[in-house]
Each structure stands twice: as C-alpha cells, then as structure tokens.
Amino acid sequence: MSPLMRARTLLTQVLAVNTLLVAVTAFVAAVVARDRLRDATSNEGLLLIVLAVFSAVLLNSILLRRRLEPIERLVETMSEVDLASPGTRASVARRAAREVKRLAGDFNRMMARLEEQRRDAGRAVLRAQEQERGRIAQDLHDEVNQALTAILLRLSATISEAPPRLADELRETQALATRAMDELLHLARQLRPTALDDHGLVPALASQVADFGDRTGIRARFERFGAIPKLSDEEQLVIYRVTQESLSNVAQHSEATAVDVELSFVGRTVLRIRDDGSGFRASRNGRPRLGVSGMRERALAVGGNLTIFSEPGEGTTIELVMGAT
Amino acid sequence: MKILIADDHGIVRGGLRLLIDRQPDMEVVAEAEDGVEAFEKALAARPDLCVLDVSMPRMTGLQAARQILAHLPGTNVLALSMHDDERYVFDALKAGASGYVLKREVDQALLSAIRAVHRGEAFLTNAVERSLVRDWMSDGATGPDEPLSPREQEVLKLIAEAHTNKQIAEILHLAEKTVESHRANLLRKLGMRDRVELVRYAIRRGLTEA
Image (cartoon, rainbow over all chains, first blue to last red; front, side, top):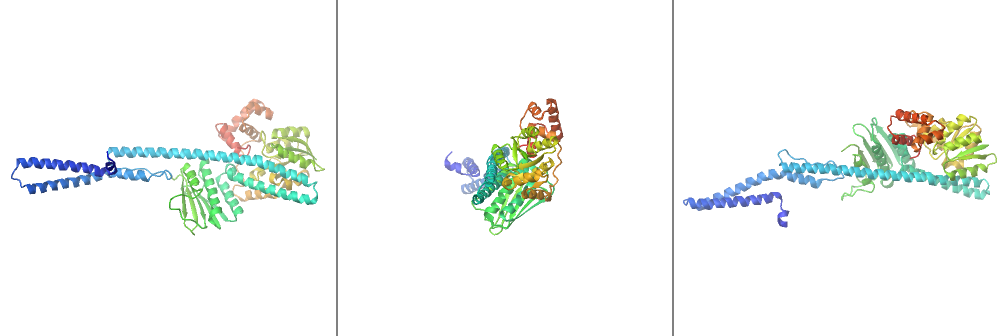
C-alpha cells in the first residue's frame, strides 16, 4: 500500500473502491445495452447512467459513513485516553460491527490492565518511599539525636566546673544543640508520621495542622465532617501526605494568611485544603507544579482523584476525592 | 543517692554517668542497656532512683519500671524519653514513674528532676505538661482501653522483637508452656492471625520501634 493510500481515511478508501466498481459495472452495462437496443438515444442513456452511478455512490457514502462511525468514535476515545486520569472507556453502539465491538472490548480490557498495573507500580513505589523515609527517620532519631543528647549531658557536666565566662559560652552551645534536636525531631516526624500509627488519622491531621499554624504563623484550621469510615492504612497515609504536601506548598508559595483543611466523610471521603493566598494560573502546557504530580500519583495509587482549583489572586483549593475511580 | 541508669545507647549512658557522678550528692551504681538488665541490676544494686529510657529493646523502660517498683517499692523512677508524645507520658505515669524528662531538655531538667523525684515529688517539664494539656483538650483524651495485661504486653514486645518462645521464657523467667499460652491469648484477644499483625500492633502501641 502506498503512503498516500495509508494516509486516507477508511471511508474514502472504501468509497473510492465502490465508486470505481459501480462506474465500471454501469459502463459495461451501457455498452452491452447499446449493442442490444440500438434505438436507445445515446445521450439520454449516458445521462441516466451517470445519474445512476452518482446516486449509487451517494447512497453508498451515507450508508458507509453510518457503518464506519463507531470506528471513528473508538479512534477518538483511544487518542484522548490518559493514564493519569483513569476510567476512560470506549463505548460502542449496539448496531456496530462485530469487529468494532471486539476491538473496543479488547481496548477496554487492555486499558483496565494498564491502569491496574500502573496503580500497582505506583503503590509499590510509594511503599518503598515510605519505608525509606521511615529508615531515615529512625536513623535521625536513634543515632543523631542520641548523640546530641549525650552532647547536652556532657556540656552540662563541664559547665559545673567551668569558669563563669566559659560556662556562658557552653550554655550557648547547649542551646544550639537543643535547636538542632528540635529540627531533627520535626524532620523525623515529617518523614515518618508516627502520630498516624499511634493515634489514627483525625488526631494526626489535627495535630499536623496545629503544628503548621504554630510554626508558620499562618492561621490554620482543621475541621472534620461525618463519621470516619474504615479506611485502609494506605488511604490514611495518602490523606496525611497530601495534607502535608499541600501545607508545605501553602507555606512556600502562596503568601496566604489562612488555610482551611477539611476532611469530610459525608458521602465520599473528601479532603479539601483551601488557602487565601496568591493562587496561580494552571500552566497551559499542562505541566503540573512541583509536588503536585507526586500528590496525584499518591491519589491514583489508592483509586483517588486529585483536583486543583486556582486563579491568580483567588487562592488555591486542593481537593482529594477518595474512591473516585 | 544511689542511681541506676538505663538506656540502649552507650553514648547517652556515658553522658548521664558523667553528669550524675559529678554531683556531690549522687552516684551511678548500675548501668543497663535494656529493660531486662535494668530490672536485674536494680534487684542486685537496690538503687534509690532509676533513670529509665522509655524505648529500649527486650523490655521497655515502662515495663521495667513496673517490675522494679513491684519488687522495690522504696525506689523512685524517672522516665527519660525522646518522645513528647502525650501517650508515652500517660503510660509512664501509669507505670509508676514519678517524673518524665525529654531528652531535648536533659541539660535544663535532669538534675532538678532527679532531686525532685528523690524527695518524693512528681516532676514534669513545661513541654511535657503542655503535651498533656494538648491531649486533654483534643477529643481523643481518654484513648482506647488497653486490652492486654502488663505481662501480656511484655510477651508481645518480645514476640515483636523476634524472640523465640524459649528465649522469651528465659528473659521473663517463665515456663515455655506459659509463654505459649500467652501467645495464644494475645492472638485471641486482639483477634489477630499471625506474628506480622502482632508486630504492627506492638509498634502502634509504642512497645517496640519500627
């Protein structure tokens, strides 16, 4: 098949073939008829033949277009599909040809498999990431902080025998060590949300939001609506991490003065983080901002969906809907 | 004042000993690197006061505190911890500790805490009190009821740390049969199927580190 042929649509190809066929048949018929019936006026006969050919091709085109429409729809669906927003499926009309139905069926099965694999891979990555974070947190906690504790104790022991001027300097060094410890403890808590294991999702979120407010001076409020349903560990972790990432974005980019975190269990489980900051225009080329794609991956891994609403000057709202797909 | 110190980190024990021994009225008479050793050494050395790290292998500081206080009622216990988590504070006080000092505050608070606890007073630093108040004001103030007995918690911790029944029996001075029945009871009480689930529970309850 020539490249030119390949570039044409199926419809034009079939139409071309059919037109050729009808035309040849008509002309052969005309030649045969002229031999048999010599009295037929040739001009009228010719016109009739041309008309017949034309209407045959027209009818053919209309019928074919209807027949081929399901394929076009299928092709459109296929080119629109995006694994980052799963759930798109091809649907075919009942009158569609068996091949088209099979094609659509196979496509849908393939999509389901791809989405499942992507979810599994996403989950595995997240699990590995959490484990690694946990290990780092543990190290910070167990090794570095214990060493700092020992430093504090030793400095205290030295201070009791040091001359007053040196004692003051040593006390300043102690204050530095204490500050380093505080920062490491905060970091370890960020890396491994032990509060989630110890207290459950809602208290962990409440204390995360309260800590955020204390640390940044941004007015932060947490509210829960409805009774908490049974959520898997992974789902809870995703809700916790999305809140964490969103709040960190609020602190770094938004210039917000207030942020509301809402967790609603009325109907679906929905997490909403809304700030009154500067907002941003969603970039036109569709490239999400740093951290957003990570949150989206997390959401996908547990079958959730993450949406960001923002306009310059209008603040930003991040919404995570669980079980959306 | 005779003092026992227990922490699974040698550098912290070293620091504690240096600071405490430098005080004219205090002396470190025993060092332990886990809860079991702390209990055994306490029985031998009969200290006036035990400074116990809350998170230790084999037996937590709180489990050791319970054992020590049961056998040596005249001793006082000061809990030492990296965690300002109110849950640990509550558990420490319930286990019989008279004071709770955060490791980040040792330089400010340790010596005064030791003296206060030795006088028979309770001692909490401001940071610890704040965490208690915060917990009081949040809706999870009471926390879930603990379904396990102290002995079952001790067995649970050792199971979570991958000790065999035989080792557990040796550490806790129990018959192996008793350990087996504790293990069965644990699974039944918590409605769990296997060790993996027990480990997760133990981590959640702060009995062992992840």
